[in-house]
Image 1 (cartoon, rainbow, N blue to C red):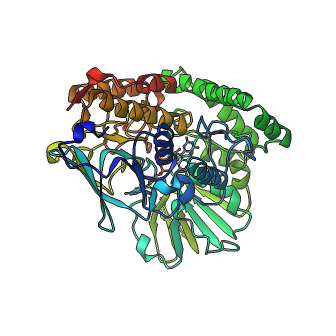
Image 2: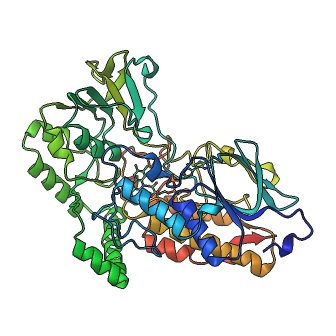
Image 3: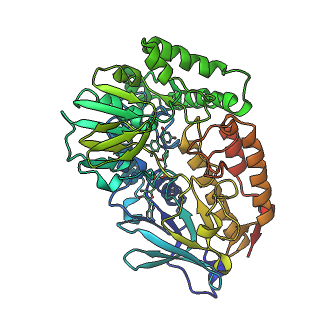
Length: 492
Ligand SMILES: Cc1cc2nc3c(=O)[nH]c(=O)nc-3n(C[C@H](O)[C@H](O)[C@H](O)COP(=O)(O)OP(=O)(O)OC[C@H]3O[C@@H](n4cnc5c(N)ncnc54)[C@H](O)[C@@H]3O)c2cc1C
């Protein structure tokens, strides 16, 4: 790979990977197994895991079954539950780090602050917070799509005299037993936390703006027999994985094609709500008034029962402001709280906001992405040679496992690196017109899906543009990322 670089200053590595979450580790494993390129993973924290290291709130678990939410090449026959918990995924990622010999490639405590493409030498210069500069032929970002917590702009947050935190910064040192707790938000994290803490706290006030669509999860332990079976017959675990993948992919039919009426998913959710919540007033408060799927559909077996406890109050006007001693709701009613938990999600558009990325001719990715990020196949960006972004714009999903998408992107990166070698080229850069045509198509498709059906959601920019989701079947994404189409790129 370094052949074409012989006249130039040689870079320290062939590849620098940012982040040691599912993406960064997966990329590292692919490079390690290939064995042809030097690489380093720069991780700002002191452990691997990303999402599953950071989100340690009570009840944190994956919405995708264990067999599918794992690397395809590293099945774990001994998942304890149908849906993996945060700690089990974290253990799995630690295990994969050791199994594939990645630890020697990771620099912990290395927060990337700047990454700049050096036109003259055709290398990336990557600067970390401790002033180190690392150089590489290629720069792969695995910095995460849901990594930067979103804190609502709300009056008085700084005035609150009690303890408060975001769900992604959970405070284990503050016991919630017997306390008055306010949770702001009713998204994916909140519905996992509420059942876990409702039995401990004195009072739980849950501030809702919009109710989520919820379907049953059906979580259960995996029997010892099944674990033994998977251990002795890994091919059959792959078959089970494939069946789970196909089942999840079938949900895309509803999201992509906007059926008339609420469709089978909407009926299932409505019946579930009716069966679980007997009080018609509470049921009305929990009934969504937008199309199912427009916002992320949630799965839970224990959220509705927890809401019916005497010490839990659902406040449907949302939270308007924070005072020294509690929360004021949207109607102006104040309620006291000892602890406020912000279950307000993440900033998916802030893919790179904490890193200054400069491409060919000094162009700034942060400036170009200010009103919404854009890439080609969610992975490469025109004007940023040899730069790859895993879980990049329009590669996230509302219906299936992100690991499937991440593995597809990793295959694309590996193919791109191989093409550089084959051609003896220093760099490849996706053509601007290819990227523009791709994004036009993505936005046109999105406008015909449930995600473009008119609700507000974290998938959208403030201008209402969806820069988050892949608007098609995941197997189509896989097919398109299997090989780099050379005609889409300029090679130098
Ligand atoms: C609460 C929660 C639940 C989720 N549930 C599901 C689910 O059910 N199904 C699903 O498919 N997906 C789910 N996701 C999405 C999940 O984020 C992805 O599936 C996957 O874990 C993303 O991995 P990643 O490596 O791309 O990003 P992350 O896991 O976010 O990892 C990014 C890594 O980059 C590091 N990093 C960031 N910036 C820098 C920097 N400047 N310098 C150095 N290192 C840096 C971070 O410290 C982190 O370790 C969930 C996400 C969250 C937050």
